[in-house]
Length: 177
Image (tube, rainbow, N blue to C red; front, side):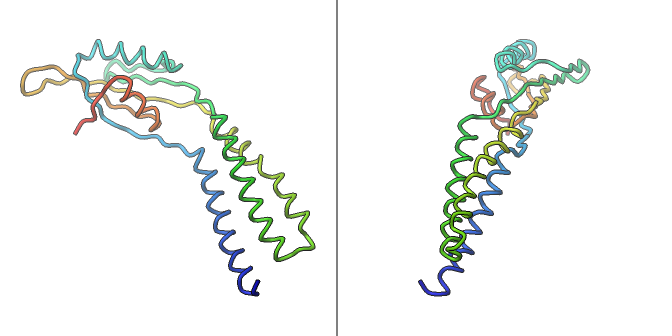
């Protein structure tokens, strides 16, 4: 190989490693969002359905504000075994590729560079320690009457985006426009 090829491959590989580090860090990032959903049922029956839904998902009520109709649920979100293993394998592949490039540049240190693969489980451990956490769901329900005098409920939910998608799908709620 030419003297210019190996350093350029090293630079590209370093960029890929940096991208992997940011990907691993993003796997534990908080993704809390707030949405407003509309239900075609009165507030009382909707609150019962929401309570049952969150009970099934292992959330418990931690606070109730009757004046504003706001309920706070809390539950522990377990980390994913699949994602921990996936991040570990991804880190191992990345470190191996990095070791190959470094071994091409500095052949006398090949065994040290390949030994860096032993650091790969740190990615899974990092994810596992940070991903398992208590999550809160803030829920506010308000009734309103439409132009054709039907009563509907407006639900304002603040939660993790995956939880919001699951709630919307399970209870067949429509987003407000």
